[in-house]
Length: 468
Ligand code: UD1
Ligand code: MG
Image 1: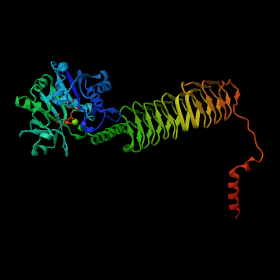
Image 2: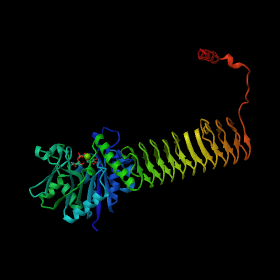
Image 3: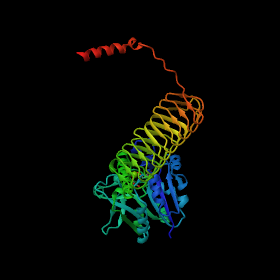
Image 4: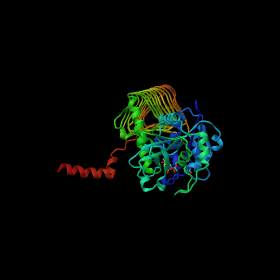
């Protein structure tokens, strides 16, 4: 098989984005644009991929890691100049090279595969991937001769009136004979409206040399959308989101309102799970089968096992085991591990805590830095007090224990299996198995004291009105 190489252009600043973040690092559905491009290219059995970096080079390298080699373009003198920076790594290699831009996140592996195949079948030295659009503004235009062969590509700013009317555009993706590419690049000049070395100019160079130049026309313009500003970013995100959502629906997931469901690209969801509107599933979240993810829930980098119900809650870096449930309006923070069948009710926050099988934490409770066994009942308004202002301390609660409502559990403390904490207790000492702990002030009733308070006068007035 012919060797396959790729060059991804990612050195530009992206001035039109008006952003502190370098353009190609802007995320689309949870993954930076340049990562989307690399991910789809990688699926084509590549021998080597080189990413051209410049603005934000370290950040781009940090994002993509060792999945690609890097060549630095210290000064951004144009796309042709950018590709030339890969010469030290690729220049003497024999094979085909695909070039793509880091700001076109919607291209699929299938399109790259088709381009390689078309290029080879035509015996071309250069094949440009083109598409038709009603609104070609900003793109390079494909100028063909009388018999339909690509003569050259003209940038928006250099186009004559007639050229600007052409609706076939350069998608910014090409396939080249690798060695021919670097030979032609050496001849590219910068005598154009932007004073840049344009990569598309190599097409005209090949054409004049009588070499075979081809164009592979995509049916779907949408896929080639280039993101130069925030408007295009939102359009690309919409397209990507629709693709992701359609994939999940095809896999047997119900999305009540796919237009208002936001799922990052790497999220996995099992069949017969129902996702209600306004849900945001982020990062590396994995959701099992037969779950219900209720309206307006947000789940990030978490594992949700089969049969879980989430009702309007926020879950971050947490784990919910089979058939557990949460919500409405609760918050799982990093390292919350909710056991099988466990119940987290409303207004509950859990952080760095394990909640055992079938344990119930129903209402208005904070559990932090704790290990709770199975079949425990935690009463309403219980606080696990874990922080002394400097350090965090841990609490254990054993199986089948009962914590009465309104208790404060001050860590570090150990409540053993089958222990009972009376409501309203402030627990500072360990509680042994089968014991009951009660730690609260004794009640004193003061005879007739009600009448000393202003409420008594207010009540008297109201009562007098009621009698009239
Ligand atoms: C480019 C093409 C245009 C095509 C369009 C498709 C050129 C001259 N024009 O225009 O024909 O229709 O893409 O989206 O190639 N970059 C560098 N170094 C540079 C300049 C750019 O690495 O010196 C990178 C950018 O980071 C970006 C990519 O190359 O990822 C494309 O550059 P951009 O400025 O977006 O070019 P367009 O104007 O979109
Ligand atoms: Mg662009």
